[in-house]
Structure formats: C-alpha cells, structure tokens
Length: 473
Image (tube, rainbow, N blue to C red; front, side, top):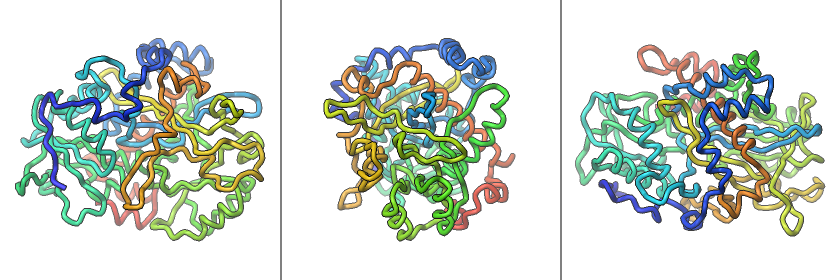
C-alpha cells in the first residue's frame, strides 16, 4: 500500500472518530476534571490521601519526561474486603489508542485532542532536529487515529505529512534506515525523514532502532523499558515505589511474579488459590493475556506454544467470592452500576496522558467493559476471558485488526453514569497514570548510555529473554 500525503486543512472529523462518538456530549464531570489545574488536583488528592506528601506530588505533576512522552494507562477500579477503593494499573502503553473514543471538547476542528497532542508534545520534541527531511506518521494498525495524527501534524506544522503503513510482516516495507536516518518510499523515491510520529504497536523494536538521528515519538527505548514490555514495567514500578514510599505515594499494581517459566506456572497458581492472570510480557491489544479461573483455563494455556521463554503471573482481580488471595491481599472489581437485569460488568478505564511544558497532563479517557456479566458463583464460569477481558481489539478471519465498539463505554452524558465513578476516581486514575509513566521514563533513562545506545548487559540483567534480545533491532 502506497503512503498517503496529508496537507494542511485536510482534517475531517468524521474520519478520525467512531461514529457513535461524533454525536456524543462529554460528561460535565469529565470536562471539569480535564480543566482542573495541577494545584487543584494535588490539593484534592492529598486531602483524600493524608499520608501523601504534597510537595513530592507537585514535583511529580511537573516532571519532564525525556523519552516516554505519550502514554495510555489501563486501570481497574477495585475495592477490598474493608471497602477501600482505589485505581490499580494493569499496564501502561506507549503510543496508545484513545482519540477516536473521546467525545469532542470543542466545536471547531483546529483544537481537537489530536491537535493538542501535536502542539504540546510532538512539536516541542522535534524543534531541535538537525537533519532536513519530511515529516511522517508510521503505523501498523488503527489507521483511523494514525491518519488523524497525520492530518493534525499537517495543520500544526503547516506542511505535508506522509502516512506510511509499516507492518510487522511487510515483505517490501516502505521504511528503511540509512546512517541512522529514517527514509520512506513515496512514488518510488526514497525521502529522508527528519521527524516521525510512531503508531507501531506490534513488536516495534524489530523494525525501528532504539534511538536514531530521525526524531521518533515515542522512541523505541520507551517500549522495551515498560511501554510495551510488561516484565520490565513491573520492575520499573517496583523500583520507583521504593523511591516514593517515604512520601506516601505508590503505583498500585496487582501482586506480580516476574520471570516465570511456563513449567513453573502451575506451582505459582497454587499459591494464588488456583486463580491468576498470566501475561506474555511483550504483547498488547488484549493478545497474550490469559485469565486462569478454572482447570480448563489452565489446560488450554499449557497447550499453547509461545515465542518467548518468560511470563509474568499476577493475582487475579475478580468477584469478591473468587478473586486471588496472595500475600494476604484480595481485591475485586467495583464494576459497572447494575443494569435493569441486575448485572454488573467488569470494566477498565484508559487514561491517555502527554508531556507538556508544565508536566504530564490528561488528554483523553474512555472505558471498556467485558462481554459477559460478572457472576457471583465460580461454577457459573465457562470461559473466564469473556467475563474479565475488556480489550476491544480482535483479528477477523482475514487477520485484519477490528474493534468491538459495542463494548466501548464513552465519557459522555449517556455512558459515564454506568461506570459508578466520580471526579475523585478520575483524579486517582490520573495520578496512577502519571506515576507509572514516570517510572517507565526513569527506566528508559537508566537503560540508555551516554552515547545514546542501549545498555545491553543491564537490559539483559532485567529481562534475560534470548528471543526478545534477538528481536531488538
């Protein structure tokens, strides 16, 4: 497929949002949250969390990310047997989706959230680019948002932008690197790229170098340091939590065992009461995540052949009657408000944030619910993923990515009330997204040498998976 070229003033709203979102009205609570100042957020958060150090929180709110400048955390609203509610980070994604699911904030096209991300993050990150060349957006899925970014960049930078497909299995890719500079093919001519907006999500490290002379947002180091690597992310959170402990701040994550080999999984499962979540550390879009609630779930998992050697095992958040119990901790889903059939669904919240001159700011948010309601009795579970899995992405019979928008929950006047959350929950979700993003950015900085190369020995000590190491370009 030849790449498209976007010119200024070609941004068309209907091309970059789901149809159901175009006519949605953002909920007043969500709009108010997005308009809050950092000082207001810090004051409110510390009021509800008296052990939190406000000066440290303000420092975090003003943190300047170096590599991980655009992320999207997936969070679950949980509670405990004592009734303590909190947002728990399931993962934080580099180059996340979300724009097409966010109700519009303004009535005019030049200040969409696409444009805001380009103005406040991309433009500032590429201003010191030394090489001459074109601007490009490369993508492997989600053309709706990737093309939206191309059109927004054309508007903000007032120049042509190339939209270039670059899939994992491309046999004749339209992207190559020479002398650490990206080149793209356009009408059989290779063009230098001075800056690239990246929407590669499937093993992006096997097509793009860790760092390059072409400015890339986000650079690949942010992916292997946690943005697309759940194993290193878990370690980054652990290290950063040790630093935050004295300030009463913490990244909330499920109890996590890392570097588990496949044959060890049944042993860890026993320690968690037979229920857990197993993750391939380097997958995304709902791929490579396995919820184990029944023996059938475990048998199906053990029968699968995997590309990688290491997994992470996390305590499973389910119903109050059948969640994992590990290290005396048990969390369960708050879930949606019961519908007219008295059914509650598992849901998660995506919080997209981006680096600005004033620190990391919330940009977009939406929610997703599972296919089937949450049962009270474990005996009623036939396929646990249908009850606990929320990701909307799936592959059709032709191996093309599709999205199940019937389970998309908008932050609008219609859907928001079904989530059972308020402004304090949104603030909590933002703080968790913020802290997890900073943890991954700090890990990225730790893994880059003064020469701008990956510290391979250090990375291997954190993530000793030979198959992954062989994939990194």
